[in-house]
Image (tube, rainbow, N blue to C red; front, side):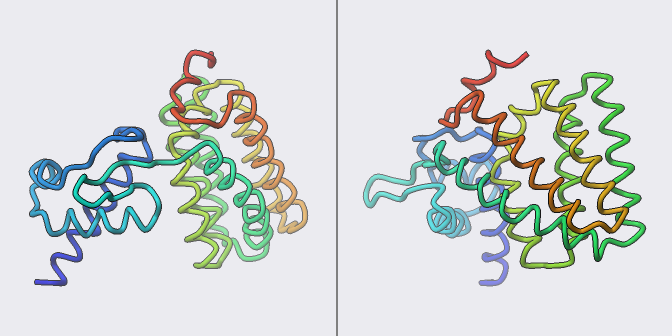
Length: 226
């Protein structure tokens, strides 16, 4: 039974974390165990377990005798994560240039062709999904489970910021062009070139974020984007 509860707790944790990161649960919102349990069709025990995990991640705060409230990410948190990605993404691309297999390279290439197509059709939601897939494959191709796990977490934490950023057509196009340069270097097995291309990609993302500001709520950017 404990194993089942733990598994349910993980599922609830993933669900709530996703909704915090995508903005469904905004900063300051109270997370009520009973309401969440009813919504997800589970008892309060896995919900309570999930809330404890979320508090450990710093996404919520639990105040005794008051409840659990969303903390989310501050602008400084987002900036910090981008800076950590700047340090690690280049390393991952360098390793991918050495260890990526033919199938992995072909899959990344397919994703970028699809991204070019969806950009031409103004399908920005698909652009965001393909951005996720490209980076996921790059992290996998790096050949380090530790590095892959860290970068996937960082990439996931920034999902809301990236969605808003990539609604800017100019940035979306630039981002995919940067992806092509990373892939070119990986295909050539040029580790130095791959590291440089990946680092420039994250630097460009940071510059784009600087244009619109870092502070939450991120939806304040929406009016500024074409």
